[in-house]
Length: 293
Ligand SMILES: O=C(CO)[C@H](O)[C@H](O)COP(=O)(O)O
Image (cartoon, rainbow, N blue to C red; front, side, top):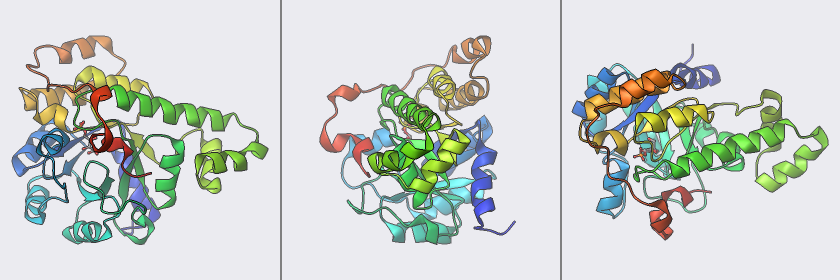
């Protein structure tokens, strides 16, 4: 299969379906993630909870750290670039990462334009809060989506809201007469051809993972039951009392999301969960989900 071909780009996300992708900041954390059964790791400088706490401008991680992470794991390595920062994305591509996340968790480099992802060989994942936003990113070339949630809060409420919104939007389009589609495309700000595809498929044309605030095995199972194809977990693992144990438990819970005996078993004795934040107290710049459009 030719590197960078449409099939290769879409194929990788299919392999990750039903799995957990873990944010990691060091090679040691990457090894823990792989050992726990993560289907991929996401390299970044700080997990979102630490980005919130630290303030300032959050950028692409140090290429040396990314290379070291690539060297120690055999699972795919993803890395984050700032929204609109096509040079950071080109650097990540040249490092040989398997996927780029054009992420609202980092400080946006461009308030108006996202990266033209169709121009790249490496596939991209992007965040969205609703169907229109997801289809705009797919129109730009994203090969995988994730609902945004509110990263770094340890609070699943926004992840739930965004997954329910995307799924509701899809159900509405699926049941819509063809002659209403163009108006719906205008209302959503979504490319018409992609909306037609959603109607035919009854789902997004790429896989859609849940992200932002998943902190427990039950959270991961909840997102799967709401229709997610897999989950991203960042702060919830490495800001908890026992990352190894929690990482394994979240992988098990994602795989067995409707088996309550397994969920009860893997949820027990995990030690301290990350301290969460009440999302309704967040304002302005602290609401990472509002970055991008
Ligand atoms: O964009 C992301 C996917 O890697 C975020 O890092 C992810 O949403 C993690 O958020 P959290 O720290 O709340 O789990």
